[in-house]
Image (cartoon, rainbow, N blue to C red; front, side, top):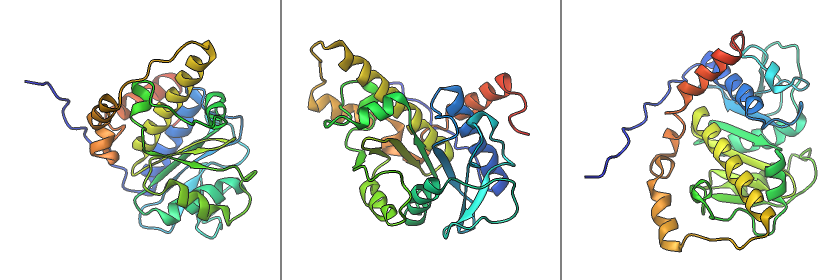
Length: 254
């Protein structure tokens, strides 16, 4: 008998207040795990029942983002409701395009980490050289660099390059993940970052790399929850991550 994990219990995120809370958690976790970039980069989440999404207020560190400070935008780039902050223009181009085109996606996370930017400059991209990387094998798109994402027409090409994928390498730029849920998108971001860090560490040694064979890669891919049910990814760990925030940053929900 092979012992298998119990199915993950999915977290209910059904209202705008729920989305605000859990998206704010994403920002705090990105800061906690050193995946932020001062006030730049962004994560977004769709507002249930509306043609709108939430994104960070431009000018705040990620460890300053709270549920109330998130900015609501419609898909024309207009701020919905009142707020003290504006949104990042590049954030609207990237996130608005993907969320508009992908009704199966409810959260998008984009990072500029050192390892993520480094791996985005490699012609080979991400290699299935370890257990972290295998989960993303054949599930990653690549988008050629076009400069800072200020041009609205780039959104069409971003959507083209991530179609049917869970992650996107923005060449010479950074990484991006999408999820049907907020926990799923963060799960993919966390492990894509680990993938990038490990690959860059391995390449820096200059030693011969041992690669798993194709059959093992294929079998391992199917062992991941995210391969069988992408929307369930991350839900097992999400309550523990919220406890981490509550313990270390007790006012983050305010």
